[in-house]
Amino acid sequence: MASRQMYLIIAVISAVLPAVTLAKDLIVGGDKGWTVGVVDYQAWADGHDFWVGDKLVFNYPPGKHTVCKVDGVAFKSCTVPPANMTLTTGNDIVTLATTGKKWYICGVGQHCANGQKFSITVQPAVLAPASPPMGGGPEGPSTSNGIVTSGFQVLTVSIIAMAMMVLA
Ligand SMILES: [Cu+2]
Image (cartoon, rainbow, N blue to C red):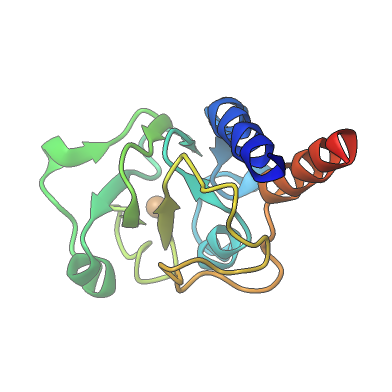
């Protein structure tokens, strides 16, 4: 009986929580924006969680920088893709549509070589509510460290705890 109620609670939480986590806009570099020589973008990326449905916002004066999505090899070598694959508006919004590793660089001059680049790991929008809050997950993203415990996971645990108290 009790376990049946738990399943019901988990089902309800599964249905509700993804909506809570959707559509988060992340301003790359915060109020410094997308620039060169000022922000450690990898440190910025490592300090955030990225979920499917989130948006990356690149703010910069048009003409000063660009945004290129590249693969891991081009990321390392700072190889700039063709112009038609480059974003240039100065308010470029990239929706994270799929899970896995993504790499972004600036295509102007030596900016990438000078640190205007970062990689992220995008996680699935729906996280199994039963997974432990500090567990790191089966994917074990390289950016993961103990500091990054998302509010989402805290919320999940809180809701489960409250639900259990109500039914106790
Ligand atoms: Cu640049």
